[in-house]
Figure 1 (cartoon, rainbow, N blue to C red):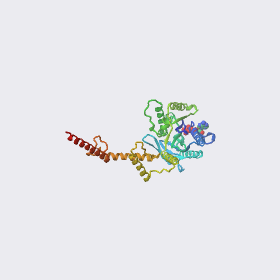
Figure 2 (figure 1 turned 135 degrees about the vertical axis):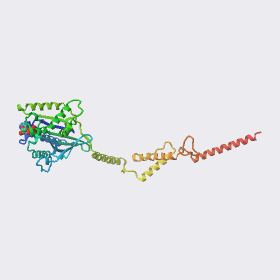
Figure 3 (figure 1 turned 180 degrees about the vertical axis):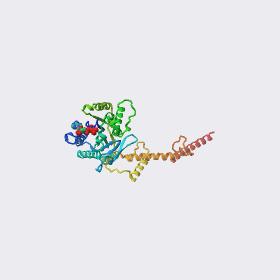
Length: 403
Ligand SMILES: Nc1ncnc2c1ncn2[C@@H]1O[C@H](COP(=O)(O)OP(=O)(O)OP(=O)(O)O)[C@@H](O)[C@H]1O
């Protein structure tokens, strides 16, 4: 599904020593002990190689959350001797409430080997930075993320998907382990984020809960989408088989039961890349211009030349003056010329309106607000009038001479 453009998360949850790291990263001794991350990388790159219909880009990030602080495990400087030497990652939230991780580096991996090297770099930084009090894996959450984007050649639609592979800190209930003092305080602090994770899971699994307390911890903020949003999420519950751990095992199963009630809605993460869209449209315009040049036999430029404009205006004038109702304005199929004709006609019409007799108070104004009479029409009317005058004078002479 991640290859198709959906977000995905696989997270391991269980008490310390139950096999979370073994499941997610794997054992170091045998190849067959490799965990979900190296197996996923193998699978992803195998699929990418097989699919030549799309262009894929893969980036890797690796985040460790310890005591509510984020650290970039892919710091390439190899200078970290403690966790504090690693770049600090902070959370930023945009107005759409999307979470962004400031300072978390993303590294491009073009092959499985490059991606595995990044995993090893992260794991090395993780080990180097282990705190003296306890094994880091027990006390921190690690999120290995594969960022995948894909697009079809020539298309401006890009699909982005993230796959989080998460190794959570041990989930033991500190209250029952019998520790006290300083260690208890620290253990409580370590487990606080798991407590918040549980609260988020409870809120999500209860219907009609409008507020989900994601913001209480960095881990729930980072995994917000994975827990109750746009993501296909799988939880792996790791259990200890020893009888003395039965309480922890039952509590892990209860947690898993709640998680199973949550329904996420994953959607395809598609977006249009405006840069690619512009390139595609420019290409399409050029292709259409070429096609047009073949059909019309002439190369189109952006605008009509002065001579072409003049020629068109002459055509319009003779079309308007032509008394033949059948006359036509022939400008061919060039849309630029057609548009120019319309513009010019509109301009003439507007000019005429301004000069027209409807706006001029004049003796010669036609009462019906029609066009002013032309000189020859006046002349014609004057001639008719003169003729009628003559006829009347003749008639009048006749009447007078009548006895
Ligand atoms: N399925 C397994 N097969 C063989 N060995 C395993 C298996 N699961 C876990 N182990 C071994 O058990 C030990 C503890 O496992 P692991 O470190 O994965 O536990 P964890 O749940 O990640 O603990 P923590 O919470 O401390 O990180 C390791 O030595 C690991 O190699």
